Amino acid sequence: MAQRSAPEALIIGAGHNGLVCACYLAAAGVRVTLLERRHVVGGAAVTEEFHPGFRNSVASYTVSLLNPRVIADLRLAEHGLRILERPLNNLLPLADGDAFSARVDSGGLREEVARFSRRDAERLDEFQRMLEIVADQLRATLLETPPGPGGGIQAVLAALRLGQRTRALSAVSQRDLHEIFTRSAGEILDDWFESEPIKALYGFDAVVGNYAGPYAPGSAYVLLHHAFGEVNGRRGVWGHAVGGMGAITQAMAAEARRRGVTIVTDTEVRQVQVRAGRARGVVLADGRELNADMVIANVNPRLLYLQMIDAGDLDQDFLGRIRRYRCGSGTLRMNVALAELPRFHCLPGEGIQPGHQAGIVIAPSLDYMERAWLDARQHGWSKRPVVEMMIPSTMDDSLAPAGQHVASLFCQHFAPELADGRSWETCGAEAAERVIDTVTDYAPNFRANILGRMVLTPADLEREFGLVGGDIFHGALGLDQLFSARPVLGYGAYRGPLKALYMCGSGTHPGGGVTGAPGHNAAREILRDLKHPRRGHLSL
Image (cartoon, rainbow, N blue to C red; front, side):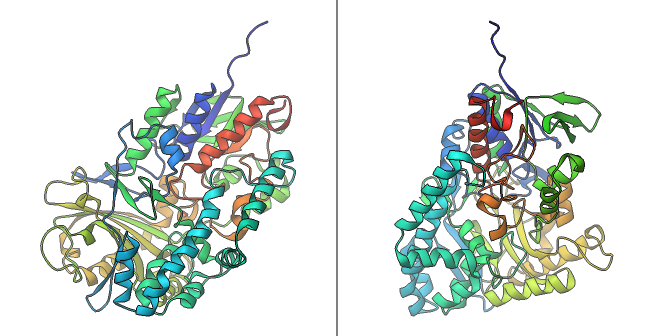
């Protein structure tokens, strides 16, 4: 009897989740080809030169959510990945020239909070315990497949595990969990604290990648989504990948090639081939056709189902829900080459200080964040935007010439689409000037020392990286688009509505961020289906 050849998979998009999925499949004997539209693998997690002599993580810019199992299984450290911990998680400059330093150790943070409110300092440990208990519930689901209708015994078991974990919580923690998923971050923080700096520290995480103010219902979950990370085994810590975020995806690509994965760049997929309700391969932009046993999409679900698949091949109810799938995180990204280190009012003295190596958050209060959001709704962008600045060259001298620096500016709120016939192509420069003005108010030498800049508006993020509406999470992290309902209820288990079509990107559980979890989970489900090829998703 002739031996059956190894199954073949085509993965659309060599971002980090596509690379992770490819590695796990290849290790199990699947022949995998990764197809990447851009000239380099990595998706939004790439390091590129944006000004002569200056390199930076041009889109995704910091590390914490990358799953430890993925790091270990893909041997990323052996491929050269090194992550440095920030000495301070965040520095929040305040209007009076003072600053709030978010220290990594809880004791140091408590002392800092006490400078503004002794009552808040006394409540801090209790709040952090509450948040950690709730975050543990999320951590427990990261590498699990969400249960869904029609999911069979695996879905039933997953639902039972979820229920058992929830029942094991105290009544108080169950109420906390419910509030985190349903209330706004602003309401919760106002209930817990009285001083603005500590509320601003946590409130910033509620608006990162979230086109909403901190008082929007559901924004507390976005805060939680940023709370489950770790660096080098230390929870709650953020870090810098030496060489930029591209060091992560280059290490993944090295492991993928070691496992036999074929990676092809400068290759755009135009369409998924569908015959008799089954994905059979892809059609490339140059007209070539590639066939495979399965197609795996590491792209935003709206891109996949609205641009790469003929509408006639999809159920109309599903298609309507994908059209309503919410994308647009209100994000503008800027990379800046600097002649010298920014000198902040709150960081007097010479040379690099721990505050320069933190995430420098310009958003001193919840009210500031709310006004930024309202500005964007009315005008298209914030008059006083929320800005997080990272200066990675203070920790990694490979990114800039000696004595000079690169800065990453992550900015909210900028409307995904502008009204009144305006476009980001014509308005991007004006919006960028608002960002530079805002930073210069806190660091007076900033504007004068800009040697070059790269501005990525929401439209640029979509065009360059496939982030629809500039959405860094491949879809809003709302309760209607989470877990079993990401991207659509009934298709939360990484399987699309067509046979042999899978999803492995951030538009699936557990959502956005450089985690690797969607790629890991999708590979597990594909391998389960391959064990039973005569039934289910891969049946002929």
